[in-house]
Length: 326
Picture 1 (tube, rainbow, N blue to C red):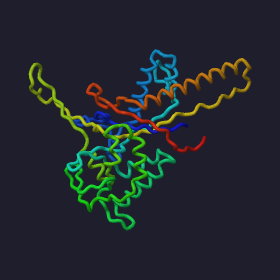
Picture 2: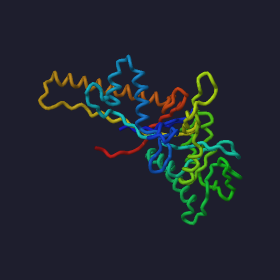
Picture 3: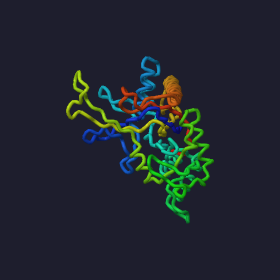
Picture 4: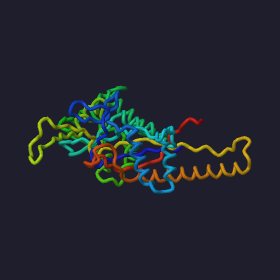
């Protein structure tokens, strides 16, 4: 199985849609156990599939795309599993306004540890960094508890309007290995390329609080016809993940088993089956290559597309995750 990590750099706010709206609030999807915003795998897969189907709508690979993603429930037919899977897109670096540094990005040991899991053999340095940060933030193993760990010298540091004094910040953690990983995924993306110079690691609990206050919220109202006055009671509040956020999602393609003739097949039947199998393998590789190309460009995710929400720059790297062999 070929495993990949795709990174999303948000150009515009991302509205992922919540499981339920509360009153006039159009919320966003959140992880049930920790309340962090995320983009469900179904949204990731659905958007990518729609883009691929549109690309090959009048092409010879149209049926191959259906096979690659799995047959839909149409015309009474049964759905099929498909040859590719996608996981949820979760937060990695979140932008926060700073009265002292204009803009910084925050992360936490949980996000970094998740990232390291999917990096596979390349994630050991990230995992070690996350563990060191956790110990310093919690005051474990003789460390004095710190409020934040910064990749830059910050005296003082404001996160929104919260003030962190020099004694609250640790800038002594070795970030060289982490900086290399960040540069590899942010190079050539403008302001996003400054993350490794403006990164602050917070405890998981503090990260939840700052993300909650850092979400973009807009109130929309309905106006009376031909008047710039608000129609009574017609308003709603919308949440979105702000621009300059970095998320990532893992995905992988499933291998096609080698051709093996069935017992009792005649020579002409074997030749026909072998040719069909080769066509399937060729189509699989063609669709996979096209998918990899698409996931290195720009794509729009989430809802409120008419308002320009969800535009992202994508970068895809192959992961070295090891799996059990079946």
